[in-house]
Every structure is written in structure tokens, then in C-alpha cells.
Length: 387
Length: 161
Image 1 (tube, each protein chain N blue to C red):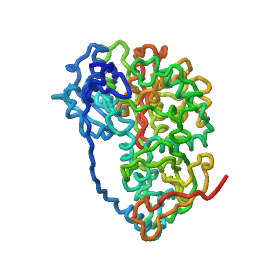
Image 2: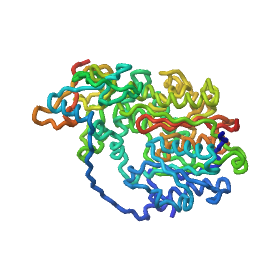
Image 3: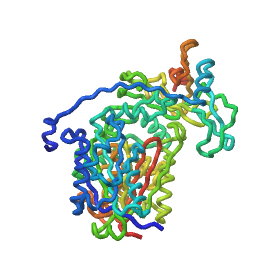
Image 4: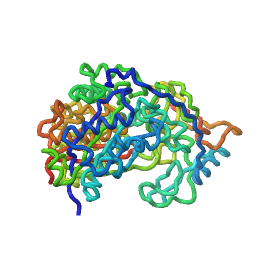
């Protein structure tokens, strides 16, 4: 017998390319303090902490040891996760398990990364199997560009359609005070004329590298309602993985099998048969413009191959029928270990009616996804109704 | 201190140089030995669905069935399933140095195989490549191969538009 759990508070740091003013523990504490301040909470209310990042990026090991004070963790359970780019969403899913199972009543989840402190693209090459894949690794961008070329071939998506995702993200980000890349005057023309990194991917098609931390506090039914007027109930979660090597999927971006599987599981759990109609907002883990278009297909917001037409229609804009990433998304803010947690936290803010200037009116049901590592997916549905 | 005066903040530099030594395992040893001695490439075939995998492995990830003991020869020809020209330099994980750009980089599906392999392509003009283009592995010469994936230096294109 499980019980309901909900996100009751969210805290985010200011995200930036470099946060030289804070150490990693200080940066984490900034997000924790903001979560507490938003709901008059403090460490005495927290039973356990789950924390996650990709520590190799900063060349550190077990940093949770020296951030115990920042986590308020002394004398309490601290759980630590690393699932690559998905880790923030994995943290959220674990927080939900711990509360739903009855093991803990109130659990604080944190994702963080300080990409300015290391060489991310080099660290990412260690994700490749050393025997088979590492010698030809080309950072995230080269790998991504190869996959994008397959997607372009299969879907017919144009550079201009991809660029619309970049413009949407950096303009939405202007309404989000935490966002890193806020570019109010960005245009499709500027994106398609930005520097080529690896065809078809240009500079403004890619997410930035950011520093930042994001905290979300999960509480059990009975407590959650007392902590906040509109808790974001975790209606469903799912985790799915693909096969082990990068080349095992037939078309990794065009057909994201783990994303299809995980979102179908959460839709089935809550009875969603038409995600485009039944979701009010989605926060997707889109590391690049082409990824956003492919992801809107793979999570069922449009038909396969229809991602370009969907963004052309305006449906995924703030005032469209299915806004995607009103926060500005990964294209605006990417502290990797926090990034998937930000998707969950931003989906929660929408359902809690606390998203401020980027609030989607009457957002009652939200989808959040994490996608990373080698085609690993976490999917969550957050709802205003406990159900 | 605030974000505004972060240039005043103390920073500490740290340079690390670690060495690692990985066991490649039984499947890689068999594959790499053939690559080194004969330049022949082999995959493993699922005993249920018939998918052929490179890298070779004991289990099919789709069926969870064992692969056959007899390995299947694949390549050295194949086709591009995705491609790019990398124009931004990254650290080469094998040398620690920046890899010179531009270079062709692609997913190759070896003939007779159901998986893709990332590798270098001897083409740096993006407009001269396409999905489905025929390519062929170019190996290091006899006596210079070490039993590593880098014994395949790159794939050369076999077609022109």
C-alpha cells in the first residue's frame, strides 16, 4: 500500500556560465535556502536528502561528504545518485519512491553542477566504453550532430524549424529570473547564421554550459497540504534505458526508444490517451534544438516526423495549446547535474501556480522528462489534483 | 559576496594526470585479436531474433537470449547512417591533445551488422556525404596494428554524388 507524495517547495540558484562567487557547497546551499524561504520550511522538517550530479565534470569525488552542512544532512540519511544527464530527474524519482513507500515523510532532492570548474567535453568522453567507443569520441556535440543528421534525413526538419526552438527557449528564458541565456532579440536568422560546430548543429542550436543547483522538497499526503496551498502531486514516474552502446539504437535521436517507453508508462498510469490534449505543459530535456523537435514526437505531442510542423504551428509556444519549456529549457540553462531536476521543478512550479511571469494559466497536468547518458529516460507526471 | 563581485573571489588551480589500465574482456580480446592479425571484423548473432551485434557480446539486449558461439564476419564495407563534419576542437581522449579540425565523423553500419559504429570519415565536405553512402574500413598496415579499435584508422568513402 503506497501513499501520495507531492513537491511542496522549489529552490533554484541564479544560473550563469560561471559562479565564481560561491563554492559548490555554497551554491547548493543557495538553492536549499531558497526552497526553504519559499514555504517557511527549515532543516528540522527534512527527514532525508537525495543529491545527484556528474562529479567527474569537476574532477571531484563524493562531494556530498563535504557538503553535509549545506545539505543539513548530519544525523540523517543522505542518498547520492549519478545517472548522467538524467540524474536530476532520477533524484526526483527516488525522492518520490522514498515518500510513497513510507520510508521517509519529507525528502529534499538536489541536483547541481559547476561546469565552469572542469573540462566538460573531455569528461564526457569517459562515458564511452574504453575498449570500444572512447578512441573516436567527439564530445557531446559531434555525437549529437551525427544523430541529428539521421533525424533530419528521416523527418525532413529544416534548420529554420530547429532554430525556432532556440528562439522560443531564449525568449521564454527572459520571463524566468533564474535562467542563464536570456536573449530577447534572438531571431531564426541569427540562429541559422551562427557558427557551425558540427553540421547541422550551430552554436545557437546547442545548450550552454552553466553553473547552478536546484532543490525540490517532497512530502507525504497529510503533510504536503499543510506546507503549501497547491502541492504538485507526483501522479506517475517511469525510468527506462536503451541498449548499452551508442550505436545499438537504429536511429538514436529520431527514435528515442527509452523516451517512448517511459512516457507511455506514465501516460498509462494516469490514463492519458491524448498527451497533446491532456497535458497542459511539458518541460522536456532538450540539449539542442533538433532534440526538442524529435522529443515532441517521441513523447507523443505530434506524429513521428511531425516535430518541425508542430513548432511551425506555434503550439509549443507559451500561448500555444501545449507549451514546451516555458522556463527556457536546457537551451537556456544547463548545469548538467541540475538540468533534469530543473525540468521537474519547473513542471512543479507550473502545477503549483508559482511560475511567475512564465506561468501557463490553469496548468493542472505537467510532463517532465530527463534524457541523458546513453539514451536513458526518466518521465514524471505532476498534477494539481491528488487523484 | 554577490555574483557582481565574483572577480574578487579566490580560485584554486589543480592539474591531474592519472593513468588507467582496463581489462578488455573475453569478447573484445577475441575481436581485437582477429582485427590485429587478419583485419577481419566479427559480430555476434542473437540465437532468437538474428540481430548481429558489433561490439560482439554474449546476450541480445532486445531478446535477452544468448548469442551464437559461432561469430559472423561483418564489413569491412558499410553505409553511413548519420554523419557530420566536426569543426569545433575537442580533447582527443587517447592523447590528451586537441584533435585537429575539421574532420568527418559518422555512424557506420557495417555490412551484415544491425548496429552502428562511430568512426572517422575521410571526407570534410558535409555536402558530399549522405545517409546510405557506401564506405569501407581502412586499416593500419600489417605490423603496425595493436589490437585496438584505432587499428581501423578511418572509413573511406566509396561513392560520389
